[in-house]
Each structure stands twice: as C-alpha cells, then as structure tokens.
Length: 461
Image (tube, rainbow, N blue to C red):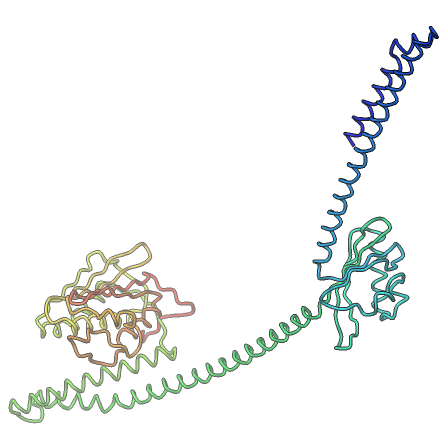
C-alpha cells in the first residue's frame, strides 16, 4: 500500500506540472498554428505519461493484492493445520446455538451424521433432555458473561455409554465454539484407580487388624513366657540355696573333718551352685523387668558410699585373678536422689563383666558430674575388649559380648540387657567404648535427682 500511494502521488504531481507549463499557456492565448502543434505535442506527452503512471499504479495494486492474498492463504492453511491437529470435535454455532460448521475428531464419531447436525440446535436433535438443559444453561452463561464454560454428559453408542466433556467458548459477539472431547477412557481410569484405592485401603485395614491381633497374641505369649520363667526361677532358688548352703556347712567342719580332696570337690559343688543361682537370678530379674513389675523408688543416698560398697563386694574376686581395682570418686556429687538398689545392681554387673573379661591389669571405677543435673559413672578395664561384629548387639538379651576368638562366653547374655533396662528405669543412658585387646569402658549417665510421678519410698526400699 505504501508503494501504491507513492506512485499515485508521483503521477498527480507530474500531470500538474505538465498542465501548468508555459508552453501550454502561450499556445492557448496566441492561437497560432505552430503554437497549436506544440501544445498538442505537450498534451500528447501528458496523456502518455499519465497512461504509464496509471499502468504502474495498476501493476503495484495487483502485485500488492497478490502478496496479501498469498499471506492470507498461508495463514488460513496454518490455522487449518492447527485445528486439524486437535483431536477434539469442534462445532461453530451462531447466537442461538445452531450448528453452522464442524470439524470431525479422529478419535470418535459424532452421535449422528453431520448433515443432521448442521443448522439445528441441541433441542432439535435426539439428545437426552438432561444433556440439552445443561448445554443450554452453559451456553446462556457464556452468552451473558463471556469467556468459556465446561460441562460433562453421557451419550449412548452401539459399543456402550460414552462420556464427553464439552467446552463452550465465545469466539465473536455472535458466534461460539463447542470443543468436545471423549473422556470415557479417563473416567474409566479414574474409576479403576478409585476401585484400586479402596481395595488397597481394605487390604491395609485387614493387614493392620491382623498385625494388631498377632501383636496381642505375641504380648500374651510373652507374658506367659515371663510368668513361666519367673515361676521356674522361684522354684529353682529354694533347692539351689540348699545346694549352696550344705557344702558351706561341711566346709566349715560342722559335720566332721574332711580331707583335702573332699574339700576341693565340695568347693567345686558350691561354686557351681553359685553360678547356677546367679543365672537363675538373671532370668528372674529380666522377666520381672520385662513384665513391668520393677519400678524405681527414689531415696536420698551418698554416691561415694554406694561405689565403695560395690568395689568391696568384688574386690576378693578381682584379687583372685591378680587384678587391681581402683575407685576415683573424689569429684563425685555428695548426694543423689534415686533408686539406690537399681543403681547398685547396674554398677555391680558392670564390675563383674569387667573382672570376668580381664586377665591382667586393672579395673577402674570413676564418678564425676556432667553438669548440675547429671553424673557419669565409668567402669574401665584393660581386658580383651569387644568383638566389633558383636558391638551393636551387646545390650540385646541372650547376646554374648566377649571376643569369641579368645574367651568362651559364660552365662546367658542377660547382664548388659538387664543393665540397659534398669538404666532406663533410672532415666539414664548407658554406652560402651571398646577396642579388641585394648579394654572396655562402660559409661553410665544418670540424673542426680530422679523424678518418678507417684513414687514414694517404702520402708523396704
């Protein structure tokens, strides 16, 4: 268009210049024959130039129109390609909802032939009344508010019911587009997913119920086991006390003199009885703690005195193996408020383990405060240490923590398990640091003041 305007202006200017030339004006006033011929020559030139300019204008106009038409055809082709690539069924409707044009979908066929659809509204076609009412309501909403609205409906096909989603869009003030998609596969997938979810929930609920029942049965079996072990342990203690007591009477000479061999054999019987009684007491303690029949009863006591008593009880056993036992409680707090009996049991068990697995060197007991509220009790030995393969299981019941390459495990493996449970009753923690052939340090951390709701120390405690 810019070229056309430029050529037109040029032609107009040229024509005006020729018409206003002096020769043409002189020829008109003089009226001579020579002058007339000159004027005619100029007029012919003017007509020729005008014709050329007119032809140039026509050419430019046609060329510009051809270019515009080509661009328009390309734009229409692009739009058609985009529309054809859409897998949905498209309808163009007028303001009354009549179908004017449609684009088929490669995924599904329309419910009736296209010739029957064009020029009609949904009310004039054999569609379900509910779908018609919904369609007209959505179309009215789009007509009033603009934008687009969606609706879902069902139609009967020879292969069954299909579900559709229609989106009605306002294209121009008087025309609307209906974009229709078959969502039967999506709806079926959603139904299958919901069915699977419900089945999964039912399965999880059933499995949870089974686990709860199994856990209840397991707890009942565990209580029965604990009750059985507790009863058996009680029944074994009485004869074991007699087995230990009668050799003691004989060794003291109350039943007459004995030779060295008799005394040696009686001593062996007595030691075996003591070991057996210790095992029975470990089982009894473990079952009582596991069944919840052991509770902490806090009292005030002196920590240094408790440690001195524990060391005194194992000093003879340590001396029999040639071990030195040391106590460092100079920095220990003066008093504590906790269960003295439970704490003493833990410390004695740690000392007994340290002496059992130490062949030479020493065993050291230390006590020092961590802060204003906690105290640490350490039992360190120079023994064989703990096998790294067993380090993670030392506090599990019936696990042996000794180095299996050097020492044959003795006992049932309940000592550290009982210590761990008793430490929890004392609101404390217990941990071990050990290396093979470098000794073991057991570190017990307990509060200086144990708070147990509702617990009052009894006379027995």
